[in-house]
Length: 167
Image (cartoon, rainbow, N blue to C red; front, side, top):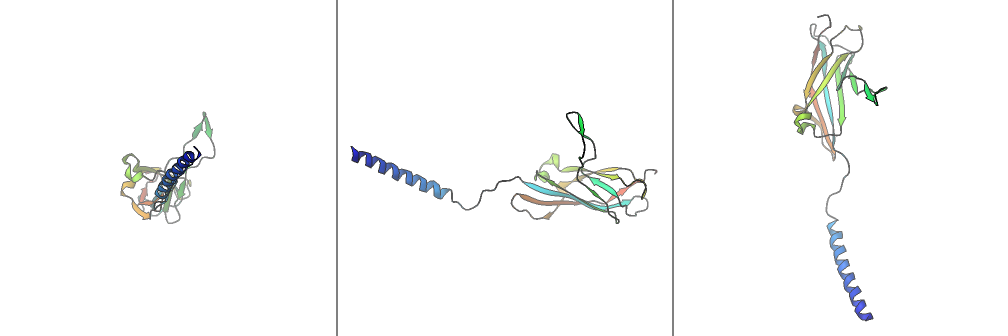
C-alpha cells in the first residue's frame, strides 16, 4: 500500500512538473507587459495680429476652455485656472495640453477643439474682441515620435487676426 501511494505521488509530481514547465515557458514569451494609459500632447501655435494694422499683439491669453466658475456642491471653487498661454511681444503663442485620451485624432467627436483668445491686458495695447476658433486635430502634424504609451505630439499652426472692440 505504501508503494502504491509512492507511485501515485511520483506520477502526480511528474504531471505537475510537466504542466508547470509548460506554462512557465509559455509565460516567458518575448515582449513585456506595460501598465499605463495612452496619452498625447496637443499643441496650437501661431501668431496673433491686429486685423486692421497687421501688427502683432502681445498679452492675449489663449485657452482651450474659457475661464468660467467651477461649482462643487453649489459653491464656486476658487483657485481653478485652466492651462493657458499668453502671446509674447511678437504676438507668438504656443499652447500645449496633455491628454489622457490619445485617441483624439481617431475619434470624430473629439477631433475638433475650441480655442479662445481673450484680451486680458486691458488698454495696454488696445482693447480687442474675445475670439473663439475651432481647431481640427484630424489635420494636425505629428511633431513628436510615439514611445510606448505616449502617442506623440499633434500640432496645429494657426495665425489669428483680432478685431478692436470699437470697430
